Image (cartoon, helix red, strand yellow):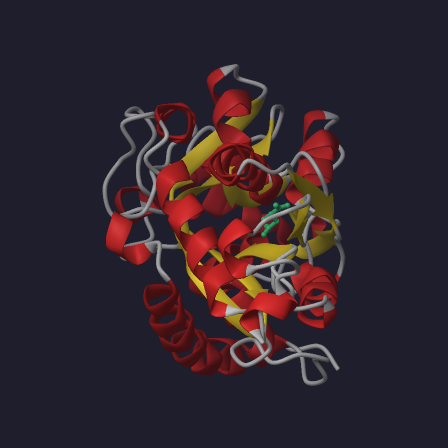
Length: 312
Ligand code: MLT
């Protein structure tokens, strides 16, 4: 069965181009991670891996598309922590976050940064807090829909400071960043893979990073814990999946290619420049991703339910 599903024979998989579905708009953080990994995996597999951006509904549109793709090894799917928050956020998903997919491996954990448009009137987190408490819903907050990392970070932030901002949803934080650079939206919590260059060039203001320790790539930026939100930590983990039923020889080839990509000096350097790093080799395997996704679905469910966030 495995051999027929893989075309001629399992051992010469892949014999044609592979599609990697990314559930957010091009130019955003997920797309950045995906293209770096796809380019390197393609070298190992000696087949092109093309990225297809399928945005909308916080990543669940792309997830649904991937779940329904032919399980033949020629469609894979890269998603982040949002794959574990969607089950609690959406009451009617057309797929099961765990059972509709074959896990291939974990990829990278990306820190987040709380940023504002360049002329936002707060120079540090203390001033930001005062301004937001005084102006409440007059302050706009960009995210990429329920299920995005920017939504999750924003939900935790608004719960922590006790203020409800006005949400402006986008198909990804790539387009959201364009609006922020144009001064059209006030705040956003987004991944360093998308914000590092804008922060370093001074095009946006930064108030803190969502990691336990400061980042080597931005040592002068305080953690939000230091800045005033003790224990505020969100790391955006990323996983690579195939549709359920994809033959094991293909899943194993894909996991081996992923592990090679995470050792690729070009990928490691680019990740480092963008404030992140590849996961340890043993985590870039199916069982590690399966266990992590299960734990994260269990972890975020109660937090999201308590925050009263869901979509019908
Ligand atoms: C993106 O790639 O656009 C982001 O992952 C969106 C988000 O999750 O905030």
